[in-house]
Image (cartoon, rainbow, N blue to C red; front, side, top):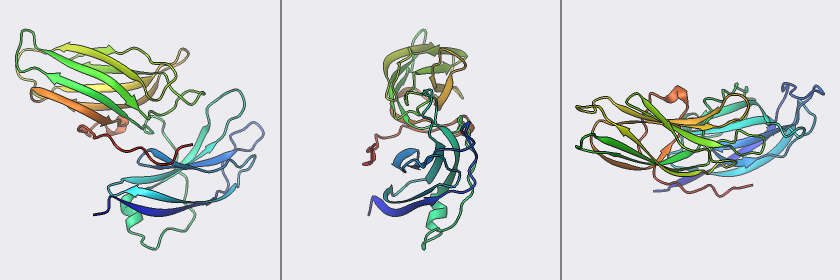
Length: 258
């Protein structure tokens, strides 16, 4: 059975985009993502609210992919600021499969909530002891990969915040990276009795010296039984906290890289 399929994607043009620059214009470009992995980027069209890109890509989609998204951004070349996200178009696997002849039309841009636009995975090892006085849960935060960039440098300053049984601890901050390696073990003393509905929450944040820290994603792991769990976990937005992801196997990196 095929493990991937090919999809031709044409990013043609945009119209009536909002002005993001003080000149009353924008410098738009597009980024194409498959399940939050960047697979293509168009050229930037300078000083235009009606850009024409006219670029075509052949994308390799994994058999179980969930969505294809095209983001429109305004490139910021002054002052080292962030590129502004203008909006996005997102197509689910089901929407694409339902159109075997393809989709060729204007699609409206949807707004982007940065707290829902997370990406990447975190590498954890969690050990819940069967017995002991006291019983101590060990959470080994090994590292993370492909985190969203939140700083003007195109990187982040990530740290992890772990909460369990009413207690919270944090790792060190790793500066200027989207691939941090903490290799820290945080320990939590468990209350007497069964674990029951206890949940381990691991959040990843970008540390900022000025202003509030930026959210990068989180995972929530139920601790209903003793034992050890180790693997890559997909980071989820706050809006998806009801989902309880299991360990994610390491995935191959996309062949496209800038």
